[in-house]
Structure formats: C-alpha cells, structure tokens
Image (tube, rainbow, N blue to C red; front, side, top):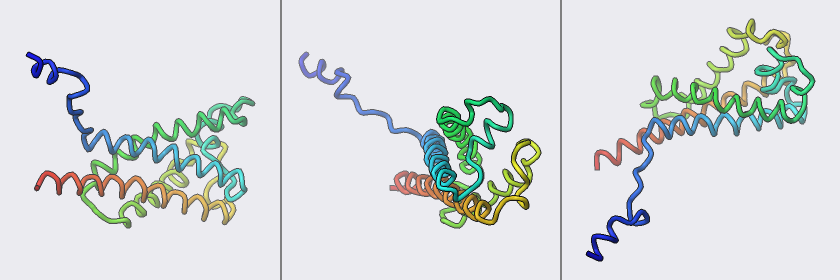
Length: 167
C-alpha cells in the first residue's frame, strides 16, 4: 500500500519532454525578443536609423507614446510574437539542413523581404536605397545573426532529436 502511494505522488512523476515543434516556436519567440532588443541597442547607439518600433508601431500609430520606452517594449514583444511565424516557416522548410549558412541565408532573405518587398506596408520607413550605408550594413548583420540563431538552433535540435531516436 505504501509503495503504491509513492508512485502516485506528483513529485515522483517524470515530466514529458517538450516536442520539437514547440521548442522551435519557443526558440523563435526568444530569438525575436533577444535580437529585437539588440536592434534597439544598435538604434540607441546610432548604428542604425530605425528600430522595431518604426516598423511595427509608427507605421500605423503616430501617437506620442510610441516614441517612449513603452512603445519600444511593446514592439520588442510584437517582434517576439512574429518570430514564432518566422521559426515555423524555417521549421517547415529548412529544419533538415544542418548548416550555419542556411540560417544566415534565411536572415538575408528576411532582410530583403522586409526592406524591399514589404516597404509599402511601412509608410514611414524610407526605401532601403534611401537609408544610410551604416543602417543597411548594421541591419543586414543583425538579420544574419537573427537568422543564424533561429536556423541553427532549430536544425541542431532536429538533428539531436533524430540521433536520440536512432539510439
């Protein structure tokens, strides 16, 4: 009777490990928040003319609060949420590619999509050819690092999961 009681205790139960897809989505969320915060620091120290609030909030809302710390914090959180979609796309298309270069290329593609293709959505953002060279280089480097973080984390996790399954 005593042994049966111990087996049923909550603290003795093994927790189910999180699956690959939820871990990938979590990677996207954390990566979006982290790299967006790094982008804010780059904006603060004038490495770039734009931060995430210019893309997400200032394009649709020109209220005064969007220029405060609250606007920046909300933008960083929104980038984290949008990064879940970015991670999902990488998961579906490129999770089997175990290379840093795939993630870097993914970051470059994201930069091109946001700065050239989606420019009409962001009314107050000048086209990429009108931005300063420092802004272009800094933001491109940031996107490469972001894509590498998302891509390699997901690919590495996928290949580690496959190795554990084969053992």
